[in-house]
Amino acid sequence: MTRIILINPYIFPKDIRGRGRWDSQRPVSPIGPYKVMNFGLLSLASFLQKHDLEAHILDLYIEGLDERAVVKQVYDIDPALVGISCPSALNYVPTLRIAKVIKEVKPDTFIVVGGQHIAFLSEVALRECSGIDAVCYGEGEITMLQLCEYLRGKRKLSDVKGIAFKHKGRILYTEPSVGLDINALSPIDYTIYPHWKECIPLIEESRGCPYRCEFCSNSNFYNAKIRFKRPETLINDVHNAVQIYGEGVPIVIMCSTFGLNPMFAKKFLRELKRLGYDLRLLASTRVDAPWRFFINYMDGLFDQIRFGLESGSPLMLQLMNKTASPTTYLRLAEKAFREFKSREIPVMVNIILGYCGENPETLMQSLRFLIKNKGFIDGVWGSPLLCYPGSPLNNSLGKYNAIFGSSLVRTPVADRVHAYPVNPSFHFTFDQMIVVNKVVMKMFNNPDAFYTYHKWTLGLNPHSQPPGFYPPDDVFKALLVGADPSEVELNFPEDFVNKFGLLKRELKEEV
Image 1 (tube, one colour):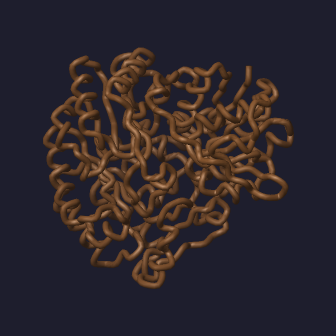
Image 2 (spheres, one colour):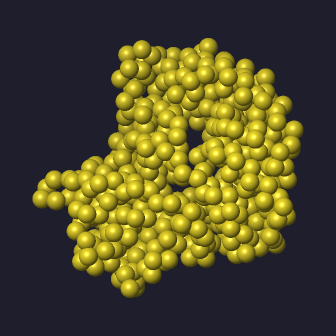
Image 3 (spheres, helix red, strand yellow):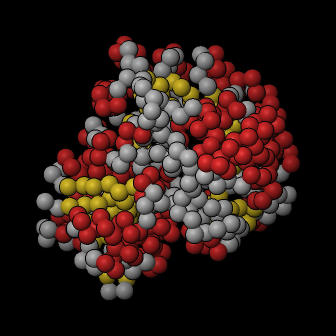
């Protein structure tokens, strides 16, 4: 049987501007690292096992491991194929290091890397790391099956769909892989993931995104297409999670925008309520999604809903290509916040303050919009702009530079990971926008909102029955350790800062 190792790398959780250390593998916390599954690897491993392939997952971040552990696993399992996931810029350097180490100790092992960040860096990655044999530049299921056929001598490498590889000094691209029916991926076998009992289960509602927001690479990765799971498949996924984890489990619904197929969403939620499962759900959606067709069925099921609002400025929304009708979009946002809040579903809003062209007036428009709707928003989480490979923004930067003075912040770290902070305009720098986002977060967040948002990122408390979140103090501790005190304190009101101060003094004795 063909043996495969799938690796989720550790991360370099440091400022992309290069400030601070760049040799750390992961932050140390009193309760361990964040326990969030790499759903792509989990789904892939479950799929491969259904095809009689022996798939092992190694999560270096959750397990606190480094390259030495990878070498041991490679020797113990002796895989024919190793797949390394690189979904984010902060995984890029570790991905290359891991590939290099494996190739040095087991030269015959075929190494393929994939994920939304490295998929757009196929040629760069192949030239920067001789340990990589191929880059998967799309979805991985069919590609991995065909790579196994290649390794068994049943297919040429050039016939494997969806990869880039080196051949006689040139880099060749094969025909793109066609996305398979995602209903065929269910059910997921959570038990094959390391420390699965401490990870919140994830179910995939849809795959892809039909929108083309300029700052996001998702649309290009999926060619602006979206595929939905059937409601009955989703119900089976929930049943599967409840059977494995037990009642009372929190579940994250994986999708770019929940409910874009409103009839599917309505049928799924209605059946879920009928079954009477004791669970809590989290999903992300858009304010202009057709939520009004199914919101009546969300009561009592959702722990929170997250909206990617991005801005309260019509000009910024247009430049982001978030919507073609900013006025209608913002009117729908106000209605959505009120409707969800009236049903006691916490409303979390994500924003980008500092997009290309941001100026004092557009900033004030966003702030006035948030203030106007403050009574219906439970938390606001802001960030400045980063330019990622594969995002449409790469093609617009020249235009924005000429009109607004927008520019990339080039640092050795940004060059190394191929993702760049952006100075938005003649008016603001990236560093200034970091401060602005923190101040706005300070205005709109309180300890309860902070906990409501971040409790989902830590995984499940193994000491609670049924499976549940860590208590607030543990969440605060996990986020505090290793953080820059000045950055932590800037985000929160005075009473929260004081609580952080007390926790930090307590932690000095524990760590």
